[in-house]
Figure 1 (cartoon, each protein chain N blue to C red):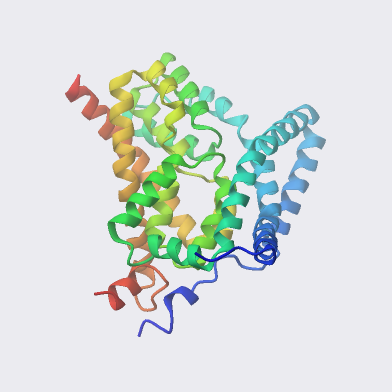
Figure 2: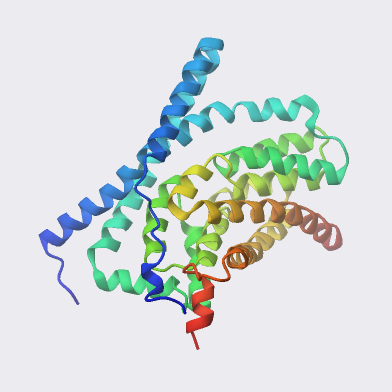
Length: 145
Length: 194
């Protein structure tokens, strides 16, 4: 086992701090953007974007969910309220799926570290899968119960 | 054909001023919003500070991981091997479990993922990790409360399966556009491996 010297620890700490420091402007910018956009999500929902049938609703809900960011629990609460308001389970599931897997707001930070190509493809795939996830979940649920 | 060393190929964190420009643009946007709707801007700023404070513990945790990762060359090699092109099922398993167990906002994890990427972590495993992060075990009781146990079980199992599918698809699509020059992904693995 290699011994960790104080010099190695210092070097490692400095290198790690530099990695985080370089990302700091993007983190701050993304947080600023998120704090402006997130309050608009419930407004968008109540503007009547949903309620157009399962297919359109699942796509619209996934778009709105993709724009949102925050803890998954917030999406559960919002989705729960949406369902109470009469929105179908497929749309609600697409909303949760996109909220937790697609990140339009964090994308600049993701792209900066992992590459634009990776970030764009990963988010596009996640978006499509969020709709597939919604349909599969609801169909399976109906078959099961 | 695959080049000298796949691990040396993709520089992950580019030294550019893009981040600063992005921050500058966001500050300008805030100024604009503050001029148009001061109350909304004030609410946004409060939410910004709340998000920042909630991010701090996760950043400290990631800092700790980064220090450990940078500390030992042996550990770097082990992590790279565990998530690299020849990692196999173990790599997938590590990405899924790591994603599920990871805490805090996703931004906090980017530096660590960037480090792992430069050391050869497969794009498929990066994507799988990021997707699996959305399975948050501590929040599942809330989902059960709103949607029921059956729904939660089905949804979570599909998320688990889709995390692997998402990783696989992301890597395949990345390779599609760059089939000529291997970009440190599975392409080089397929050419050089086995």
